[in-house]
Length: 100
Length: 138
Image (tube, rainbow over all chains, first blue to last red):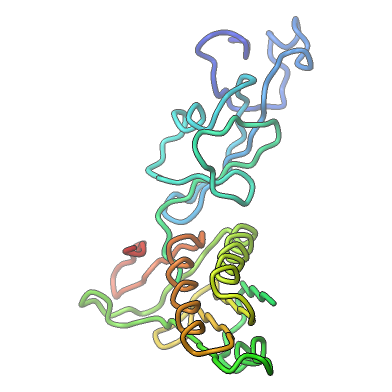
């Protein structure tokens, strides 16, 4: 089991179960951001919760998602550029829209 | 005043008119978009609209504020229905009141064009024997 701070462990799916690395290094001292990703329309699927290293950006998150979306939202606003993600952010995958 | 109405309730042109009419605005423009059949030569049985409701409200309010800056004075009403609709049923209504007809037409056109580009709403079209997601061409 790899710890969150090890290279290559970007975007570990969050689980509530304690893992070996967390037993030796309390979770509270590891800088990280936990984000929820939600999907709509043609990309619809259950939401995912991901734990990313502190300083992770939307582009980092996007690399972990198998989606064709061209737009993303953070909260209820379209993301502009490549924002740094904050702990607790809800990121939405926005496929091409069809309203009207 | 800006009114944004998102939900499963049937849309009403009369409700839209009542939301925007005011004494100092002599121009009222109302656009209603309905489910069309056929679409691209295929008979449409129904359309299912889904969306990210909280963000639709945020985005439509932004669009309405943009229109209010470009064409000041007057009211704006933006409504989109979610759920399953049959051909002929209205899925969207945009209504504006402005002092004169030119601003009313321009604001109404701006609002529907921006809504179609930006509102996080998705449309799944059902045909005999199949279905498909349809994105706006804009």
